[in-house]
Amino acid sequence: MPRAVTPARFGDSRARRIGLLGGSFNPAHAGHRHVADMARRALRLDEVWLMVSPGNPLKPVAGMAPLADRLASARRIADGRRVVATDIERDLGTRFTADTLRMLRRRFPRARFVLVIGADNLVQLPRWRRWREIARDTAIAVLPRPGWTRKALAGRAAHVLARNRRAPGALLTESFAPHAPWCLVPAREHAASATAIRAARAEQHDQGERRGP
Image 1 (cartoon, rainbow, N blue to C red):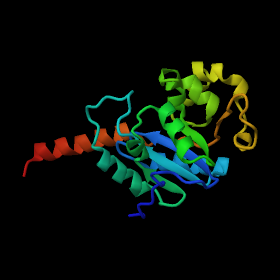
Image 2: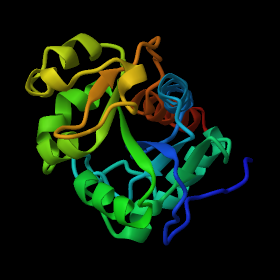
Image 3: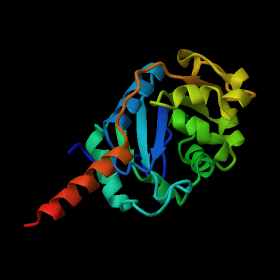
Image 4: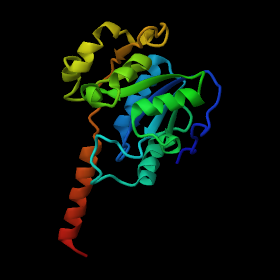
């Protein structure tokens, strides 16, 4: 298992480019690592944090594994250096992305953060609390997702933020004032899905019970 390297709980003053890939990671899988690697390379990030949420407000509690299990699965796909698994939102006491970003900027004042999301989350972005504030203050990198990419680019968030779209290479080279940019990272879509993984595990469990001891 990779070393359990995590961001400093109380922050630090290093100047870094950090991608924030948040989610339930229920469980983490190869698709998450693919997104982290593609974003890191395209945006020339120093690190990508796999931020395992204590509880996603937009996802049901039923079927959600304990935080410790989800964090462990994220650490298995991380390398502990460039891609780092963390439950820092638990330490911050935040569940909403806008609050997390505000706290991270306080604790890591010289870091430049990029919110890394899949195309499915760009579709859902208008449902997030204070989503316009998030998009105004934080650069966003969108990764293609099977069945979602075209829908995302035709959706409300993409329409509202159209004038702020940039090429990936320009995302962190331009000034954010008066509005942070966003981009679509050109990358192949990865078919892995936590929902499919859980369904496959449930099917295996059911088959085992039917066969008996």
